[in-house]
Image (tube, rainbow, N blue to C red; front, side):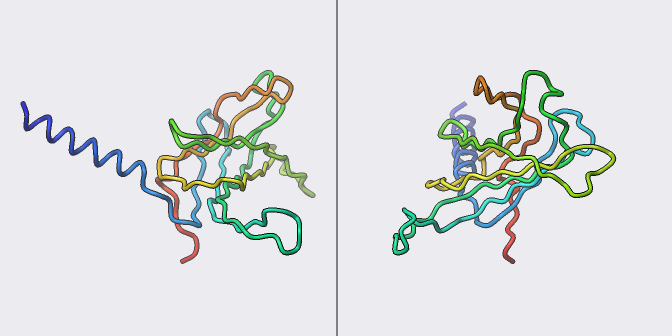
Length: 164
């Protein structure tokens, strides 16, 4: 019985270490649909950015992490009920999360199949993101500030380096 407990503890420690492994920047992931929405897909770019503290010309630089999402073939948020927008959502489970508005892109020649592309980003993340960080595109109601169900999602454990 004690051997089983030791093996379980060792395995549990390995799983926890894997979840806390930091992502290598820059990297990207494909966001997959949770609901059966034909053609809906997205991608997220996870990168480091250097930002000034203020707008002053000689302001010191600080490093932050950024999550940017591009999603396409999305129906109107209202087609899911009392929602009027999409939001990007990233979270390190049981630690912290970030929400950011997604903006529809007006296309010069929209697809006659339907669906709209949306983009958004958040670039004020000071800590390191780990491989268990979830990136999602979710429905949202701007009047009630209620975050709705997940439409597209993935985790950073599949994040692919882009600079090689």
